[in-house]
Length: 346
Ligand code: AMP
Image (cartoon, rainbow, N blue to C red):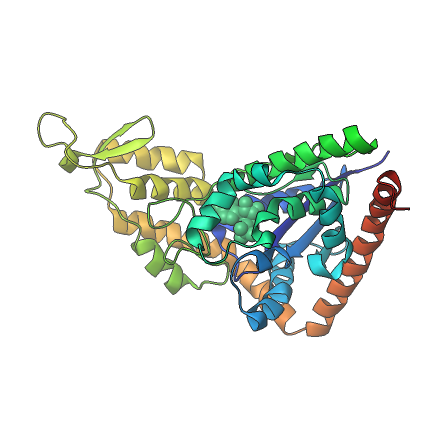
């Protein structure tokens, strides 16, 4: 029986954080260990060109992300680990797929609008083409499962639409790819606002952070008086409702995020205990934050040790990358040939 294919990638824009780890890497690990799937994981270095970047940093990061993958447990014996741009077919394939997508559709995507707001001076064709290139990354391997965070859903919708159009217009047999969800499909920011993101200072914990750094970052999560009620997942502090339960100030998102982190690292039961304490005798945030910082470090420490080993063995890393690049190129070339034939280019 043919195995189902899996494709995922992370842009080469800097060090990985807990959002990448829970949203993407955890799912990548699960699927790599499932014999039903053949897994391909890349560094999306071409996607890095869609927003402002530094040339030397990109050169370094496209290698560092592979090291992060390996340190986090991705195994070159089980998964093909590669650099997107080292397989020349991705960019070529994106051009073919762009012929079945309208500009209007791309301009209306929320992800595009967000980036336009973030970088108004940098609205390039590459940025507009981001979702088409992502569809190419997935469809070029006929992948059906994509372990990425929930923020990528609009892009997966585009990939499915392109798959349908290609199948209809050219008789291809692309599966309609779906997100493979993990428990951390949306990791919140430490600031209490929005999601954890590389581009928002103070929002993230990197996989390479030491215990002291983690402690300092967790300490900054905004909290409240420590005692109150929880209404439909919203934490409302007693001090926020002085007049017979009338809420006087906005409830704290920081507390909600803190509890979500507790659930991720210490489990549902521990969160339940702390939630009960919040509604009863009250919480001492310094203790909760300390417990969380230690739990995060416990998860990250083995990854950091493995990373150190890999940094000391650059030849091994080089060889893993070049084998992965080669394998990915061979697999992609089969689908590219089929599509070129069906589109009248062969
Ligand atoms: P990026 O850094 O934008 O290339 O994202 C790489 C992967 O990490 C994608 O699968 C994202 O969906 C995922 N990701 C990034 N930030 C978060 C977050 N805060 N929560 C969950 N997943 C995330």
